[in-house]
Length: 433
Ligand code: GUN
Ligand code: ZN
Image 1 (cartoon, rainbow, N blue to C red):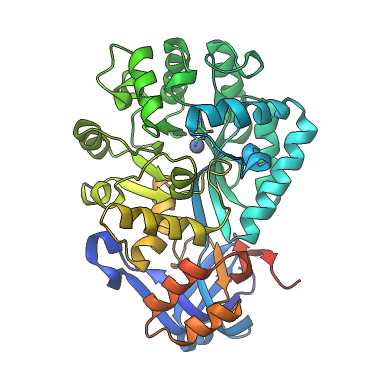
Image 2: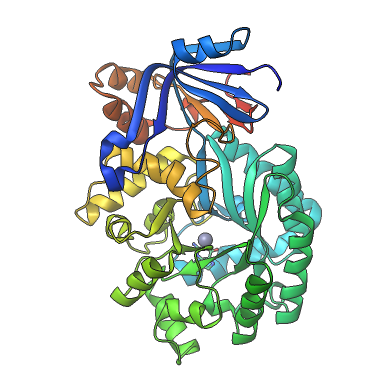
């Protein structure tokens, strides 16, 4: 075992899920530490205890910094990064007007590689150390995504988009091609180090039954791959799905008919669900990616996070950039708080922080590896500066509890608060160097 590095500061970790056991699930050590060795967490707890367990370790002590699990983004579109902040449309017009033309540019592998670099730079600068991503239909773009994640030592899931109708011809492929290209990527990348594959039919409207059949066949052939797609984001989309798949009972049933509803499935948005769909998600154990900045930005609606969690559905928080309007986990938690308020359910700071860390990790199927600072887990962490701006410093000075300090970060924080990101025991971003 190599020598440990100790990060010492104010430590945040989990002992349970605040949606289940209340806010005491968030454990706070005012003088805490985490010891990292060989990419994993060797020990964690009160600083005195961790220091005693690792004599001779390099100690990096920042008394005011908050040391927290790295943020996890369980639904994002790296190759939409160049069109983030595009004005004025709801889902279908936004896809046709901005998204498809941009994704088509990824036919050029050099462009895709450049965007993948920009994407991961932004994620790490904002404190995200793991993600679950949609590519474009292009195999080479996914190679660029995985290569870049691997070079940085990140845990990541991703899959090439599968599409065969209702999109420009240069973004459509045959169902067999979608199958073959996805299978080739699975062979190259699934299980390579910290990487995994997510089978990614874009959503029902850009899929013929044959394409969904191909995606289901892939899922049967590779049961340890994740599945990712979009579900019930926008009312016009839902009506369109009912026209395209008249035999299906509802939107979720379209996916279930083709073997795409499983405990490994992560459904983006899941806003306008029927009682049957909610119950079925809970029964099967599928996960939901809540994308609140995107839902605000595209005028999609507000997911019932508290209701889904109460039914036992795994829910994680996600940026959904470029439909999402920010790379920041603080903006994302803030939007989740605001959307909760609009539904009459104010999520607590502990609940919001959980969704952005362990919740998103659980949605990806990695709850035992990332999203928390616990012995044996992979060493993905962030160091946060709660005094990064004059206003934050003033507000933090008034914080009467850890929850109050965390809520100030959620509401007022941005990338200036991210001092360092650590991925698999290596520092992958430093604000000040
Ligand atoms: N539904 C199908 N594709 C997309 C996409 O790229 N972004 C969002 N927000 N919703 C989608
Ligand atoms: Zn999406």
